[in-house]
Every structure is written in structure tokens, then in C-alpha cells.
Length: 230
Length: 230
DNA sequence: ACCTGAACACCGTTCAAGT
DNA sequence: ACCTGAACACCGTTCAAGT
Image (cartoon, rainbow over all chains, first blue to last red; front, side, top):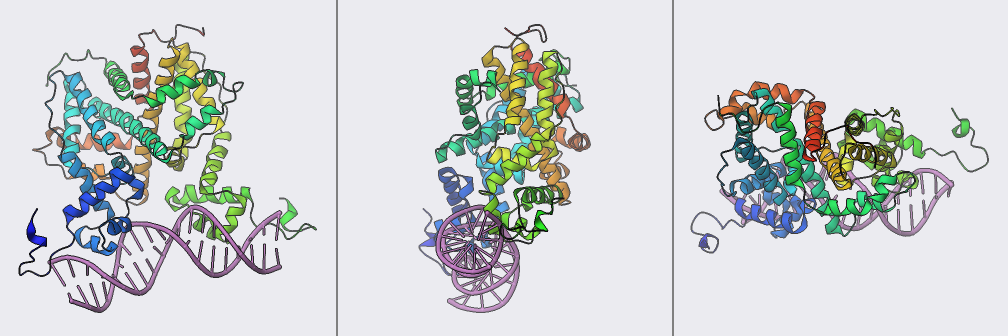
């Protein structure tokens, strides 16, 4: 609604592009067409500009992705953390997972170039804090965070691929493999084919997360939720 | 050692390329330069041929990658499976992880195009079988496999990125973020920085795997290693 | 200050033609 | 049967120039 681009004023011609405009166009491409379609050239065309115009506003594609991820994370509703440490640990993991599940392109960015935003660090800090509150040593808490992160990013990756395949109207290769199974070579898998497909379609992140967290807590041989901070 | 390429015989000129030759050249690029350098054009240059010559021997790049992954998996030493079901589950997960850790480019292939080879299915079958032998229902066993897979692929992905960064002589973005932490905003992380870096350098796959598996077993509320097959 | 055009060094793949 | 050349439709990015 700013009229700056309508009434140029005296400081040169109106800017046609801006960081904000670029970011929101990029976000549109990401959500509507998927990360594999976001390119500098495509983005420029979208804004009826040239690829190189973008480089005036943004260092390179990497910076663009970082900015996009940061923007998403910053927009997060700040929910209150549960008091019980195990719950707090779970909550952190859920939040992390939620942000990324909601913008799957970020998973690619996170795993290929691995941008880190301050907002993400906030969550990590709180998870490690919760792990310590569960009675873990510092080393154990850091390690526990990593295990949870592996699980999280793995789940997201598989989820992302499933969605990509869906968008293309294909089955995922696993599904294809399951469908053409030799029942002699793989009796169990052949028998469980339908259950497999059903399970693959559902969302079991939460359930698995609890298994992972409880496994970690049990490994530390601590009774979850007993200790406060040192 | 076949002299076919030396003595053409009567059936046209000697073939300069072959599937095998292509595969082994590709493998060389993958291991020496990393997956990001394997392209049809690069591969052709490597073999002093043209990109299109490759397409005579191989349908497309996707097929090439599938062939490469299959070859690796087939070459696996067939180890004997432990009798104890929990150990068998762990062994399957370790094997899966081992194959992929040993050829990190496959992780990308698995997560982007997700090729499935029969050898991989063999391992999956044996893991689900082991889970059932642990006393899980079929549904629980399938779900357990998935959780383990998420953990595995997540760990591999992070590992892959670390190695890529190392190859480029860079720090990973997480390391960079940890180094420039604001100790007021993130007191715990700032304090644990050195431990973090140390932990990140180590290999904790095994330890985490046990936590994950035991968490899953506990969730099923079964005493691991009690039941045989139904 | 903001943007353009041409260029560089890449991709995977198709198609018609050569030997 | 096996391979080549030219072409198509893409990438990200640099650099010098335009207004």
C-alpha cells in the first residue's frame, strides 16, 4: 500500500524490485510449485525482471534461501514451554519438526547447505536444557539432541519425497517395489504389503519421537522428570 | 583381459564403451570427487567420449545411479545373522547404515529418487522379521522399521554434509553458528561449544541406534528377546 | 541507485545422421 | 551396432555497460 513506487519522489526512478517483493515471490513459487522449481531465472521471470536484477538485492541463491527460512522461523507463534522436562524435550522436537514439515523446501536447504538461524538455535538450546533437566549430563544431553535431530530430519526427508512423488502423480519407489514383490524371496514383506502402504501414508512422527526420547532417557538410566537444574 | 577390443573380429568395430566401463568410471568419480561432480558430460569426458555415447548403454542418469547402488549392495559380504532378535534388529540396521555410509552419494540417490534394490529389501525383511521375533505385532514391527530408517537416513545425511564441508575445507554451518554464539542469548550452547564440536566429530550411530531400538521395544511393552515366531 | 545484456561454464536429454 | 554433432531447454553467476 506504500505509494513509493507510484510517486517516485526525487531520488531516482522507483525501484521495481525489493528484498521483500523477491522473498514473497520466492515463497509463492516454493509453496505452489516446490523447491525444485525455484531458480533465479524462474524467479526473475515471475517478477518480469531479469535474473541479474535479483543479484542487486540478494547476494546469491544461498542467501535467498537463508532469508526465506529465517522469515518462516521468525513468524513462529511463541508457544509456552511445558514445565515437565520430558514434555519440554518433546515439545522442542515437535516445534522443530513442525516448522520444517510446514516448509519442506527448507529440509533440502538444511541438509545441503545447512543454514542455521537464531530462532532454530533457540529451540535447540531449550531442548538441551530440557534434557539436562531430565537428569542427563551435558554430554548426554548434546548427544540426545543429535539423535532426536537425526530422527527428525530423516522423517522429514522421507515425508518430502512422498509429497514430491504425490505431486508428480507417481508412486514412491518403495511403493513400486512393494507392489512387485516376489513372495518367495520376501514372504513377510509380501504379506504385510497393505499394512506397509497404510502405515506409509500416516503420520507417525509423534509416536516415534516418544520412542526415541524414552529410549534416550532409559539409556541415561534416569527416571524421567525427577531432577531440576543443577 | 578380454582381447575383444584389441581384435575387432568381424562384427563391426570394437566397442569403446560398455556398461561395466561406464559404471567403474562413474564409481571412480563418485569416490574421488563426490556425487556433486558426477554428471553425464563429466563422465563422458572422463572416458574421452561424448555425453550421448553413454545413452546408448544406459537409459538415463537415474538408471546409472540405480545400477551403481545395486552393484555396491550386491558386493556386500553376507554376514551371518545373530540369533537373538534384538541383536538381529540391530545388525540389520547396522548393515543398512554401513552400506550407505560407505557410499554417501547413495544417500542422495535414496532420498531424492529413492531407488530400491532387492538386496536392500532383504535387509528390511530380516529387520521386520526380527522385530516380530521381539514380540511386536506386524503393525508395530513395520512402524519400528520406519523409525529406525528415519534415524538411519538422518544420521547419514548429516554425516554426508559434514564430509562435503570437510572436502571443501569449510566448517559446517552449525559449526560456524556455534563459534559465533551470543552467550547471553544461548548460555547453554555457548558453554557446551567445545563438547558440541567434539561430539559432532565422533561416530555415535551405534549408541543412538540402541537407544532408538530399546525405546521402540519398551513402547511395545515387551521384554526383548523372549518370543519366537508365531 | 538500480537494472540490463552478453557471456561463461555448466546441466540432462532428444533427434537425426554418420560409420 | 555403436557413436557423433548440433540443438533444446535449462542452471548460477560475473562483468561491463546503461539510465
